[in-house]
Image (cartoon, rainbow over all chains, first blue to last red; front, side, top):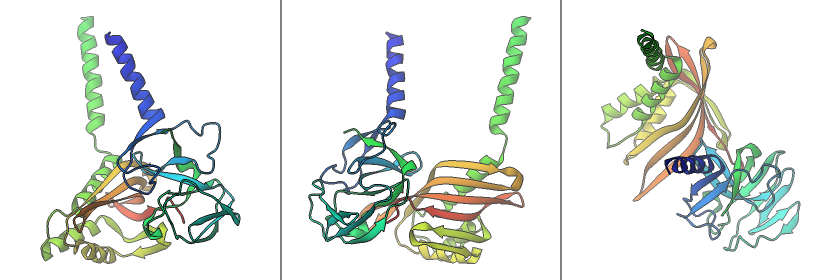
Length: 148
Length: 164
């Protein structure tokens, strides 16, 4: 019994420390998709064999080992993105975002995403643009994808 | 007899490990400097003029003269004298509300032979804004230089993770 308990404890430690990281959400930048105060899990092996795709929700390392951001990828390496009156354009082509359901009047001039970088943004754009943390991030800062 | 020598060996090994653990080294000195920096930087209560000036001077003494400061988000890169740093600290500490400063997840890379160390850490500043407790978290990179036996901050960079 004791040995089984030890095994379970060890497996739990390995899984939740290195593979499936619990993330306590603080902030409203991903609402309504992800609510403030909820608990989610980051799957670290999500991008082991395949690169991140557009509209994936990813966990990226902001600082140190514990401070992370949950954001959605809207732009891939090399693409040019812009936002006009809340509407996303990828390489000048209007791109629908069904998850960004809150009204937005954001305007972002066209910019090209650097190689090995992704453009990430939150779903909640019903706030002043200056108060929202978004932008292009180096691929090596992406820790994993959101499992649920 | 064999058991006694085994115990002696274990005791010696433990003594060596304890000595290595407690022996001062550059990394410990750097961590102590950073701890001093955060303790001095935090402000718990309203400070009187002399106290604020003293603390600002003590914080300034932890930096080289001059020191490079780079804030990537604002494309700001400048050289500041110790006096400049002290003046800016006094300005920041004029805020009426208390705030706390901490440095976590510190990694230190030593080039001890050159007296240079690179420190990457998470800077967290918590304070009251109105009635709300707010926190700002940034990744910072410090270059520390050993001058006259003391590790001082020669360059500080606030790393920009998301570039618009």
